[in-house]
Image (tube, rainbow, N blue to C red; front, side, top):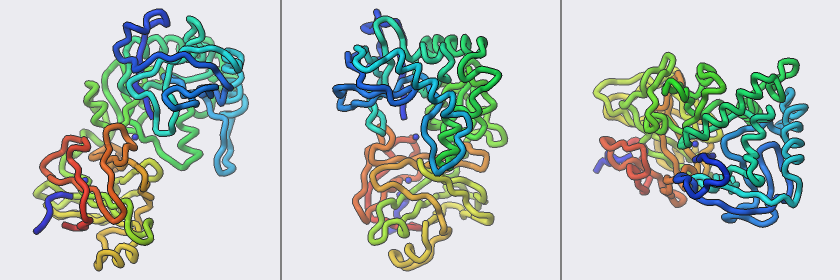
Length: 388
């Protein structure tokens, strides 16, 4: 019997002065702690863990990085700007400083870091870093409007004063997230909204939104849930004709060569999806020219044709997929050629709420192609049935 079954750290933010924590509805918790040492411009270590975390990532800001990967040229990210941000924070929060931490709805991220606004007495340290030109505002939905507007004002003060990363004689050459993407051969993966126009663009079109007006969303559904409308250049609204239907991420035997994804065509037309994109948290794969899906049919996209054939006895529709699906958690999106997200799935709590988990040799699959709530509720676990 055929199965019509078959298929992104970070932030919830808040506002109000240090004296009014009890009125902050979106705050998950308020904690006291002691600084052990400053790790970089927006990260500190604690002498004693809070919520099981001894590392704190500052909310609402992003400072220049202090690392380099693969021997690549870091530009002026580290020197002077990354080091300047780190040294500024060290001057504000020397070892032994008593601080107050205010967390948002998500208190700990996927890296085990506590996500918090950091206060030294009445001083909002996160805001101070912005105002002194050592950071760019970085708000990921959901967030509090007043907090965004306050931090935006602090950043504009630095921008208009030409200080720190905004110094016109030696400005920061790449925003921190641009630098991280370059270091790890990634592409932008968050939808970007204009706080004032309430429109969003696809990840690759983020430069269309002014730096000071940008807010970020993990998924297109998040942007729409926040009341933003699509202004996706060349892409338009995401199609509802294609779904990720199945993900086989922990294959038997040689795991990496047995993995596959399955895409389903819900329409009554044959669809050409050449140039469409599959993206997980680590890599991006573009479907080759001539990739077609007939109406009501599945397209099996595998990493390795021979490995797939050894498991299932036939060839996949497409092979050579470069995604290495994480066995302990990952997220996968299907995007059109302009970068607009069409479908999304995550597993093993890689994204909050997506707690579905498959054992070795099992697949996760969308159990009803007529049901697409963009949530884990659409998914089940069972025997892999590629192409069915």
